[in-house]
Image 1 (cartoon, rainbow, N blue to C red):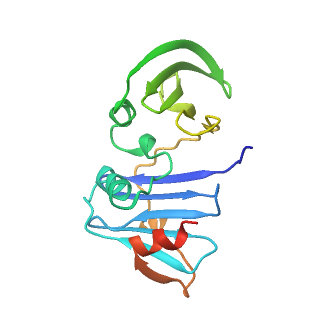
Image 2: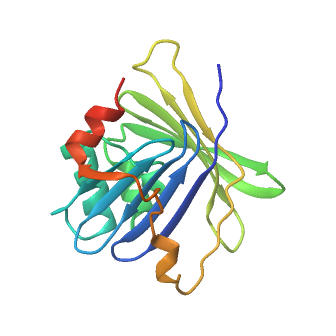
Length: 186
C-alpha cells in the first residue's frame, strides 16, 4: 500500500518556517516569532498552538518532537545543519556510487541509524542538493518506506511575511498543542 503526497517547505533563518503536507489530509505547521508554533489540519476546526520553544528552527522542531511527539515533515532536510541531523544516531554508512535522478547525476549514499535505514541521492553538480531520499522503518511490520522524489529547490534571498501565514477558517478554535494532538490522534 502506497500513498502519494506533496510537501512544501519554506524556511527563513533563524526561526521561521512553514511546512505543508497533503499526505494525510492537508496539515500545515508554521512557526511564528519567539518560539511559537501553530498547526492546522484540514478539514478541521482546531489550531494547535505551542509557545516557549527555543526560537530557532531546530529548537522548535526538537520541541515539537520532545514535548508533543510530533515530527515535522522531512525536518532533517531543512534544519541549519542537515548533515549533523541525519548523522545523529548513525551506526554506519557507505558511498554506493553514482546514479541519475530526474536527469541529474547524483552521489548515492546509504546509512543505518538504529531502527531505520536511509538512502540519499545528492546532486553531483554545482548545487549539491538532495534529489531523492528513501527511509526504511525497520521496527515497523513489513518495513514500510518513505520515498521522496521530485525535489524542487529554490533559494530566494528572502520571503515576504505572508509566505509564513497560517490561514485556517475563521471558525477554527485555537487550543494548546497538547489538546490539539489528543483531538487529532485516533
